[in-house]
Amino acid sequence: MLSKQTPLHILLTRTKRVSSQRHLLATFTPVMLKAVGQALFSTGLQNPKFTAEEKQGEDYEVRTYQPTKWVSTTLSAMEWDTAMNAGFRRLFNYIQGNNGNKVKVEMTAPVSCRVDPGAGPTCESQFTMSFYVPEEHQENPPEPSDPDVFVEHRKEFTVYVRRYGGFSNEKAKREELLKLLESLQRDGVQYVDKPFYTAGYDSPFKLTNRRNEVWVLKKEPE
Image (cartoon, rainbow, N blue to C red; front, side):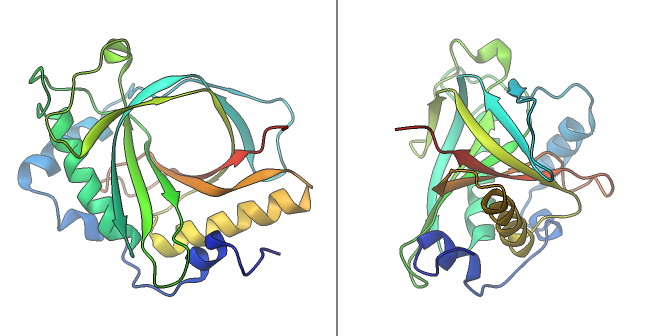
């Protein structure tokens, strides 16, 4: 079982207001709704490349992602949804042309969120939401115009991944993360306690066959 003293455990067990992905629709402008709907209902959406290890867990995958660039924004908040809504707006504005080149950047998947848990139940956690930069911009991503948005250079990293469906919300993310950690403990796998990641692949318009993931970093030998 998870130690009750870790910041991760505090975040996972904290009682909060839970809202579904449908609540996000209410925060979108008509332009955002149209653009996101078109982008995420199209085929061939670009994803970051990874290699999957042959030895997978019973209920999780092991993936190694190549070095890539992402456009990101970081927020501090008590609630997941508050941070996600604000972060999405910043990044959406970037891909719609709020950048130094004033160019529109294609939507990609997944939308990832790095979570750095707060130290206690009354402390804010840090959320870093990111869009993968499409291949055509990987070498030279447009510089963000918003000072709260930045280009993130991710080195190669390996994660344990648990996949689940449906409309994801804060409660679902916490529950799926706990299941993944319990599976890793069951298998005696060494992992990094924090930070961890969530990943979403679908627009709020998609009603079936939805794809969500939680990622836990592999602990590398010292």
